[in-house]
Each structure stands twice: as C-alpha cells, then as structure tokens.
Length: 208
Image (cartoon, rainbow, N blue to C red; front, side, top):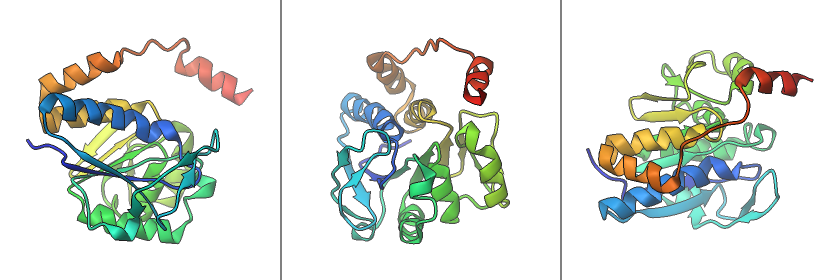
C-alpha cells in the first residue's frame, strides 16, 4: 500500500470535465486525510490550454505530455471521441506517460486513448456503455468489461461513463490509502447516488 504523491491528468479539446474533476475530488480528500500531499498536474499534448466539449470553457495546464517522465497516477479522461480519439500526437504522449507511470486510470471514453496507446493489449478495460460496439471493433486485442462500472487489471484501472470514475477512484483509494480513508472520502463527497431512472428507462429515452 502506498500513496499518490504525483498525479498527472491528460487533458485535450473535447474532454468531459466530470471525468477528471470527480476523481480529483476523491484524490484531494484522500491526500487531506492521509496527510500525504499530492502534486496534481494537468498536461496537454502541446502545453496549451484546452476546452471541454459541453460548455467550451478553458482548462489551463501545467505543461505538455513530453515535459514529464511519468507519475504515481496518470488519469486519462474521456469526452467527445470525435475530437481526440484519432490524435496520433496525443496517443503517443499517453503511451509515453502511461508506460512510465506506476498506475494508469482511464475514465469513460478515455479507454480509447489508453487502448490506442497499446496500454491495454491483452487486458480488461471498461468504457461508456454506448461506446462498446465501436470499441470492440477498433480494439480486438483488448477484453471489454461490459458488465463492470470499473475494473483493475494490473497497473491499469478503468471505469465506465463519467460517474463510474468516482466509483473507480474510491476503490483505488482503498487499495492505496486504506479502507478508512476511502470511507471518509465517500462521506465527505456525500456520494450515495440515488438516480431517478433505471438503465432500461434511460435506454428507451436515448433511443427515441
């Protein structure tokens, strides 16, 4: 068991803010309660600010993908794959940092970057349920965990869509900081979801 003293977050145009803000909230409380401060750095492929895909607001960064040698934890969020999934420079940077980081954690469609970088070959990974068919056709060498909100396979952690990133990070905190710290994080986040709709009702609405 250890702690994350350095956390890198890969950001890019088209990113979903909650994919990394949720996990960072968990990690921030974990650092506070363990009294083990963590350095959190947002990195883009060229060191320039990026914009998220829903509000178009700017996300500032601390450097580029090539400015760092790796982290204790590398977080790879997702978002609008049409804006980032085929970006060769971004994928190459994820490969470099992911290879040199102790733990890699993807959220939602961030799985496309991790798999594209070759970091998930022969491993199990989770991603957003609506992306399952496209992911399977694109990455036949990766085992898609369709029935999991999060999964751990060696140094690779991954989660399904957006809120599942919080589930993943709470379990990651349990593994790194212990159960008590994880429970404190969940309580302070008041993370006891009570969604108004079932998966079936949501699927019907999305298909209409």
